[in-house]
Amino acid sequence: MTSTLAAPGIGTTASPARALVCRACSARYPLVAQHACYECFGPLEVDYDLSALATVTREQIEAGPRNIWRYAALLPAGQDPATRVTLDPGFTPLVAADRLAAELGLTAPLWVKDDSANPTHSFKDRVVSVALTAARTLGFSRFACASTGNLANSVAAHAARVGAPSVVFIPSDLEQGKVVTTAVYGGDLVTIDGSYDDVNRLCGELVETDEFEDTAFVNVNVRPYYAEGSKTLGYEVAEQLGWRIPAQVVIPMASGELLTKIDKAFSELVEIGLVEAPAGGWRVFGAQSAGCNPIATALHAGSDIITPVKPTGIAKSLNIGDPAAGVYALEAVRRTDGWMEYADDDEIRAGVRLLSRTTGIFAETAGGVTVAVLRKLVESGKLDPTAETVVFNTGEGLKTLDAVAGQVGPTHRIKPSLRAARDAGLLG
Ligand SMILES: *Cc1c(COP(=O)(O)O)cnc(C)c1O
Ligand SMILES: [Zn+2]
Image (tube, rainbow, N blue to C red):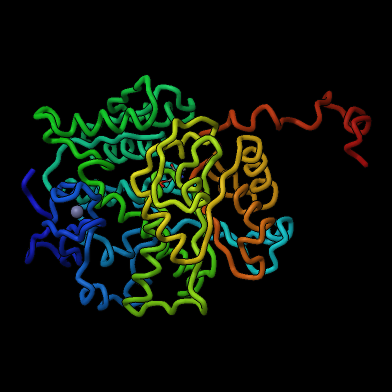
């Protein structure tokens, strides 16, 4: 593919994106389908025309649709609605979690940003909408990904919405809830006997073949655009708080990309004058599972080097053993005086149940990781219980039912009579 996103003069509003820039050496490239730097192999990121971003006003955003496209003027693609490949995700609930706060000993407001409310029930709809919109503008006709489950689900659904072919690749040991919710959309679903990191490596090879020349892998060749979709979570939280940035955020990490982009969104909002930074700045906290904790381990060791691991454990959507954005997540957490922790499978199950019981939100295992880590951060004093905090629930409990199915169930079983109800103690 040789086309670029920059098409000045066409469409309604132009994209504010100007170039791809290397996160490691700052080399610049045109807005094409490329994810690694030719100079140093570092990852590429979208760079914007700050003066274009700075023209955006709160009123303009507030007048937009109640989905991620209200922030189109801050994204690399999709300014013209006709170009979008999308399920219109976003504007998910920001839920006040007073009882969870009380239970954990937080005295300042605690919020859960509930991204399980997206069309395919995870935050991945945000990144897929932006990636595939960019991909179609770049001329790709088939959509693909390497996935730990939720991404495959979202890519397959987006492809079905626009009638495009899709081929998604997942490890063969994923939860049935992730497999069925992907397969039902009818695209090709390839399970691979290996880890996510094996799947990702294979996709990196496939994307170089002639047969896949027409194919956008959302998290490989169009990864820079994909990653930008996560910024909308940061924008939304700020807008939903009345154009404020919370003092603390707790974010689950797989590749670490989501964490870096929520931080980037906050920085942009401040830089372009839409929001004032909170006094003392914001602090970013990262959450992993004990079965896959390479980023948190590096932080705890005071190291800049992330040693890949072979993932285990029930938080499968977070099981990336060689996290592409890990060093940038470390950088964001250190720069903002945050921290990272990890939780084992029992703590994850307890986290899922605690969140359900105190907020009415049933999260997948990734949400259990985040809540369990929030608890640890409060207990260790790393997180300030007197400062406003937002935790991100990124996925839906119905996709990982097995995680808690053995722990919860009916509390009573009775015959259909008043007497049986009385005998069971239901009448007090
Ligand atoms: C993919 C995913 C994440 C993390 O995404 P990264 O950007 O790779 O860190 C978090 N939660 C859920 C449910 C996911 O599917
Ligand atoms: Zn470089």
